Length: 419
Image 1 (cartoon, rainbow, N blue to C red):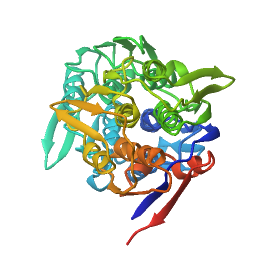
Image 2 (tube, rainbow, N blue to C red):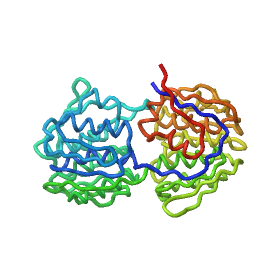
Image 3 (tube, rainbow, N blue to C red):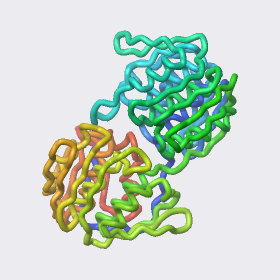
Image 4 (cartoon, rainbow, N blue to C red):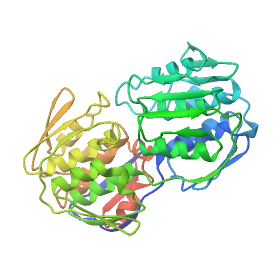
């Protein structure tokens, strides 16, 4: 098992290229199931989750080849089953359910795993598919779904769900008739999936709003598509520049996807300005406290909450951070406390008292974004102190060799193998 070792106290300076979006790559790989033929995806991030999703399709008979340019030929896919051994490591594997059911009329998908950040039920997926005519049962940890052919339906999500919206969009693309999804997720990744589905011959309208309409078609064809930049990786590097008092240009970053996060940075005293093909972020070393509430897009993203908590700990005064999306997403707090942070939890709210003088020590990563927060705290730690972040396999699920990119900005960081 690997660990990341960081020597604190060095400002990050230079340019970093933002990788393709993990949260777009995964549904786009799943969407290849809908077409018989070779789909080509470019700008694919080299991540454990992306590799796992490719393995899921390969286990069902699809031909999957490549890394940054990924080719998926679903013509030979004949076994519509996603087995537990693969699905247990990644929640996004549930995204194969809708495409399998739409194309083959049957699917058997293990209930998914992933980060332990709270309950993320799949009821919204199943309710929508049942509205489209699927017969669904749960058997020994597997979702089993069947239908002759899905039909259009009006579906209202009881809660905003990104993967649920995506699954229902893909299923409805091959359903007979018209479908609507109300209270749909509005994330940029949902918009990109709709764009790709339409390139495949689907008729999807309204993606990026709360109501999506889909007119089902008889068949879809494979396409070629370049995946957009990862807004969460970009937000993480923005905070890294801020907490180290650095000056970093993020190439490929799309600031329109990060409006809520950028507004928080600017209010805290961080300089964020557009440049050609990206943004420039400069830290001041003195920050104002913040009041932050995670919300579905276009609100502040839950996937940046842990990273912004590190910035809040450096601010002059008391910050209040409220997590409304997941009920168990403060697992990084005890580890930040080991590094001298003063954080008090009241239900779903964290009260952060700054300014903190982070001191390096050994900490344990609990989930993907918590891992990133601990790395950021290590970068911001006092000069001469060392932070060891253990169990970074979580980090590898969502960041493409983050230590290499940080070294390119002047950080003293390395990956080590632990027994």
